[in-house]
Length: 337
Image (cartoon, rainbow, N blue to C red):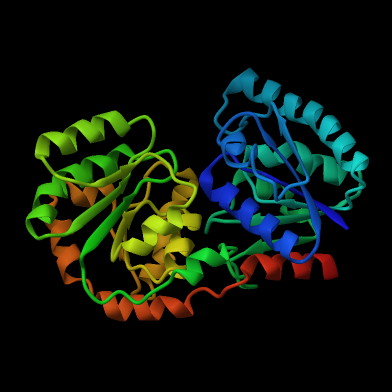
């Protein structure tokens, strides 16, 4: 049996694609990947062996385009869907799993045009444009934020490395795989205060801002574990006792799986403000701290939060939020439908 997984662009989408692929492999199901030459798809999967075949099409986003460019982008996706359809037929694919993002558009449309089963996973609390468009036509729509709950597909390693945090000895700053200048600036502002209290800093700053952050830490004479991107991010997360992070759903549920208490600062320009509502899902359960960027103009507010958070209580409670084998659940339910 063989399935296709499509979608990507950002780390949030790609981490789900990887989790589904690993589950498929574990269940003895062969799987191909259809992504894009844009975004991070190739960096994530070009050299991985859990896909039997990988295809990277020249697709780009439509939502951020304006006027005539939007029409041209949509027409290009339709043209690429013909190529994707040929790929699906060549591999005799009947089931297509979309994890969202513009990378998923050609293969998703190809699945519908050729009467194949389309299954969609929506990672965020607010549906993306493409997923909203295709939801009425897919066979099953999976989400961890809807009434019909689906466990979020997080790789087993985040659960395997989980531990209950008891004492604040290290903090990890996570701006996502591309980094976030606001998170980076905040980390640099807090660095001296944290260092004086003997708290170790782990900092994912993104490729574009790496050299600036490196120089700033050197000028402060503070030793940090600074990195731009790491495929084994679970190893960094496991070392930390608290996370200060953006609130993409992938990051949020990976932190939950690892039982890592977090302070979330959502990206304010995310579509439909979905990062805020992702974090609100946890805040409503009193299992995280949530601040907007505007609330943190004075870093004293977040320092107060850092040193008042009940690590043990939150860490032990996060175990109830997410269960292991979410990707197995999706694959098995889809193939039984």
